[in-house]
View 1 (cartoon, helix red, strand yellow):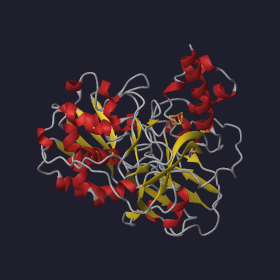
View 2 (cartoon, protein in one colour):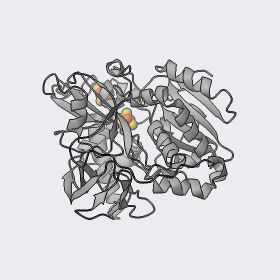
View 3 (cartoon, protein in one colour):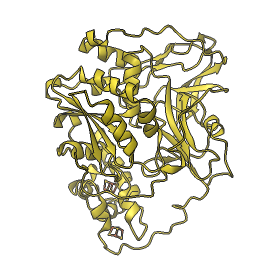
View 4 (tube, helix red, strand yellow):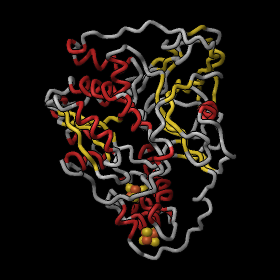
Length: 439
Ligand code: SF4
Ligand code: SF4
C-alpha cells in the first residue's frame, strides 16, 4: 500500500531522537497521588471514598457521574488523605481525591477473561465502561460512548491512531514496539463489536520498524491491515487520519461514525485490552518526558495521579531550569507553570525546553504570502479568520467556517510574520461556541 495522507499540513522539526530509543521504564511513585474527578470529557466522577479510608490499587474511588463520564480507580494502595480542590495542568482548581501512598502496591482482585471470544457486545462495552477507559491521546472522551454508535452495523473502519505526529512524542512508538501483541488483541476485541469493520493501524512512515512489526504480526489477520502514512503534521488529527485512510471527509457537525469510522489511539486500545482481557481498570499509562532541559529524556510507565515532578526526577532532573514546559505536544499542548501538578489518564507527555523560543518572537504585519492557507488542513483562510477574531466579528468568523478549525497550530507555525493566528482563532472559536451554548 502506498503512502496515504491529507491536504495541507506542515513538517516541523521532529525532535523524536531525544527519547525514541529509550525503552519504557516503570516509575513507582513515592509521594502522595492526586486524582482530579474531572479527567475526561463529560460529567465529573463522584467520590465513593471518604477521608481516612484505606484503599487498594485498582479500587474504585470515584464512580461515573453519568453516561458520558468515567470512573476513577486508585493506582496505589494507601489511605485517603483529603478530598479537596487541587491545581491541574490547565491551571484550574479541580476537586481531587488525595491518597497517601503506603508503598506496598497491594491490589484489589481483578477478574481476567479466559474466553474473550465468548463475550457479548454488551459485556465488552460494560467492561470498557467500568474500567474507566477514555481517549488517552489527550481528548479524554469516554471510550464506551465511542464504541456505542447509533448504527454499529454501519461502521466499516476501526482506525488505530498510531501516527504520533506531534514532534518529540515517542510513547506510542515505544508501545508499538514493546506491546504489539496486546495492541493487536485490543483491536481484535474492538472488532468483535463491529461485524463489518476492518481494523487499520495508521502509522507515519517515520516509524518503519513499527510498520514492519505490526505488518508481520497481522499477516494472518484477515480483518486487519497496516496503513503507512506520510510523515506530516497533523496526520494524527482525527479528521486528517480518517481522510488519509478512507478518503472520507468529515466536518465539525459530524462524528467519525457518520463516515463509518471509529478512531482510537494506541494507549486507549491497550487500555481496552487491559479492561476486557485482564479485567484491570485504568491505573497506568506511558508518557514521554523530554526536551533539551531534561537530563535523560525517556518514556515512562507511571501510576496515574503521580506528580509531574516525580516523572522529571525519573528522567534525571533538569540540566538547568527550563524556560518553557508544555503538557502534550509542542503544536497543540499547553504551557505549564509548575511541576506540582498531578498526571491524569490523558497526560501523554511533558516537554521541557531551556529557551522559550515562541516568547522571543515579535509578530509583524501580514504580507499576504498565503502560506497559512496552504498549510491549513481544514482548507480555511487563517489570516482572514484571525483578523475577524481580532476585530470581534463573530458572525463573519462563523460564516467563513472558523468553527471548522481543529486548533492544530499549522498556520502559526508557517507564518513568516510570526502572527499568532491559531491563538486568535481559538479564542474566537471559544466565544462563538459559548454563545451558542447560552442560546
Ligand atoms: S486555521 Fe485552525 S485548522 Fe487551520 S491551520 Fe490554523 S489552527 Fe490549524
Ligand atoms: S502566513 Fe502569515 S504573513 Fe502569510 S498570509 Fe498568512 S498571516 Fe499573512
